[in-house]
Image 1 (cartoon, helix red, strand yellow):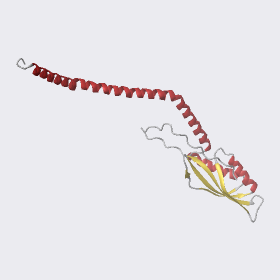
Image 2 (image 1 turned 60 degrees about the vertical axis):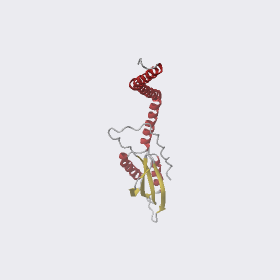
Image 3 (image 1 turned 180 degrees about the vertical axis):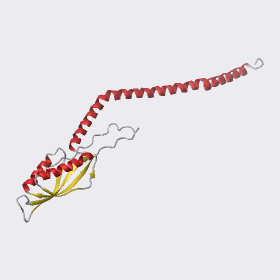
Amino acid sequence: MGKMSLGTQVVVFAIIGVLLYGVFWYFFYSPMQTERDNKTATKRNLQAEVDNAKTTAARLPEFRREVERKEATLQALSRILPSQKEVDDLLRKVQQLAAESSLNVLRFKPEATKPQNFYAEWPISLDLDGSYHNLAYFFDRLSRLSRIVNVSNLKVDAKREPSIASTITASCTATTFVFIEAPPPAPGAPGRPGAPPAAAPPAAPAPR
């Protein structure tokens, strides 16, 4: 080095300095900076999760109230709409009301169901024999059931040879609405959070 000129020595020392800095940056500074950036990103993600958890915790009473409202709605619907298991009891009840109203049931035929949103329409074709008074009494008793039963397509014909207890024949469609129960979730399947409330069932008009 003593034989080199001052300018050459400055250049050599500058090159050595650059090489040392490069080694330091590549093996020490750059990995430290990468680790710092990763920890900063991890901290930012954790902070976002904490903020979300705080927001959810703050809304927990609201979620509980929503669950209670939906449970109350479900209980109200279950009182109005029979489940599949209760349909047989309802069908027997309709037949019983017809018999108690002094009507002869000539035909009682449940038709195919018509699935809607969370319920299914179940029409029942009825042919009845009796009197106007007993028919009106039967429809009045149907309207008083806790379950929805709509009567439509009513046709009444006077008998050519009436008797005291039988002056008419009538045909109609009595439609009830069956609640469709959701199947249980598969084992290990996540639940369904916050599903929107279902639409209200159709109102039951007075039998005609």
